[in-house]
Image (cartoon, rainbow, N blue to C red; front, side):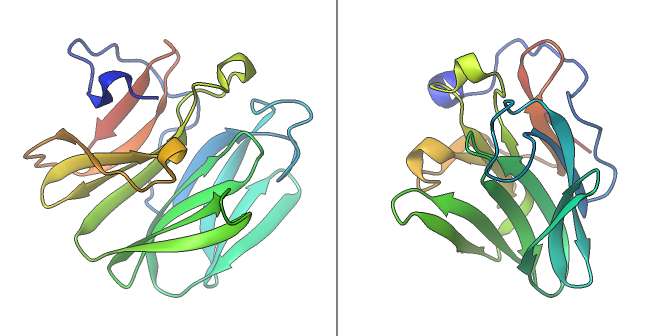
Length: 186
């Protein structure tokens, strides 16, 4: 949850709780034992999301899931909800898409956002179980030079402006080691 839907007036920088991103086709996120298995919580192991042979995949150790078959992916990002449903933001053929679990329909769906969207990033804003009532998957991106975000609790329907006139690319978002949600640009 983003308090007051704004960025902090006094940032507190820290290291991400997952590996830093260096490739737009590889992302990392804390998760449970397996998809749909939260028996041990959401901080069991780090999952990797990657693109391989026209498949967007998630893997942790010897567990591999091929989630979406799609051509020409140039960027992707991963998050899990509190039930270990995967959420994937990706760019294919210059359009941004979001693959997510829609509770209203009771299934995974894909939403197309279009051509004006860049640098999609996802992260669950707080993986601690005692914060599950307040936590959200944050879906951030750049559009027309501005930083926006959407959140899971709104079914990703409401677009919120965070900052105007961004002249850099959004690299990564997520919780840091000081329990603050941060945005990193490059």
